[in-house]
Amino acid sequence: AQKVTQAQTEISVVEKEDVTLDCVYETRDTTYYLFWYKQPPSGELVFLIRRNSFDEQNEISGRYSWNFQKSTSSFNFTITASQVVDSAVYFCALGDAGNNRKLIWGLGTSLAVNP
Amino acid sequence: ETGVTQTPRHLVMGMTNKKSLKCEQHLGHNAMYWYKQSAKKPLELMFVYSLEERVENNSVPSRFSPECPNSSHLFLHLHTLQPEDSALYLCASSQDSEIGGAPRDEQFFGPGTRLTVL
Image (cartoon, rainbow over all chains, first blue to last red; front, side, top):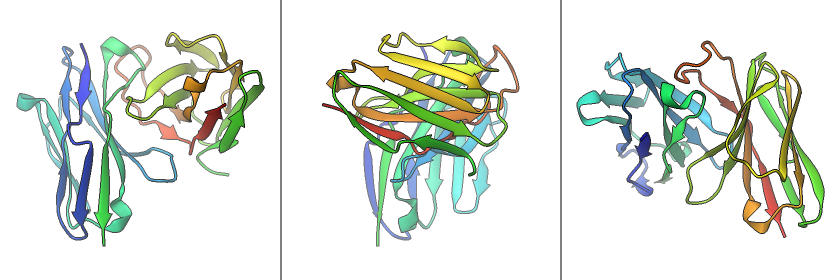
């Protein structure tokens, strides 16, 4: 069965610290997509990244980086030099052909970055 | 207006009321979604419309009734709700690039309607 696990429910860091949010997924499909979304206090989820199962290259976008490892079924997200504006709930999601349009969502990790 | 908008942002209703949630997307997308977000639970997909046809209905109780009059607008009609229906209801849209395959298109979300059922 498809599943996404975000084991960290809440993380609290001090500004400028690096922080890694973990995401572990389960799927039997060979073609699938992984997503990260950010949900700030305003409520709307904001798309951060999509990775397909055939592309294991790590990606960096500014202070954000993602580490995709098929061997461990993980797609971890690192924020370098965190800022207060990074405080939000972060969701990892899995899309595979077995569920058509339905993304499988993790429970989210609430990140608090304190000044 | 840009992106995905939702009205109202907050709604308090009694169990016997009838109300509607509205969603509008200004992105020219061909698919729209209703999600329910409750505390301590994964995001729940309720309905999906693609090209104005409902393509997904995930065992949602009949007290929730969606309507998609065109590709830009989506409604969720509510009647005789229960207190456990209190949640954040999120609307999203996407431009589907592939039908029937793995969902690979990013979804754009609205800010949600915070619903409280008394």
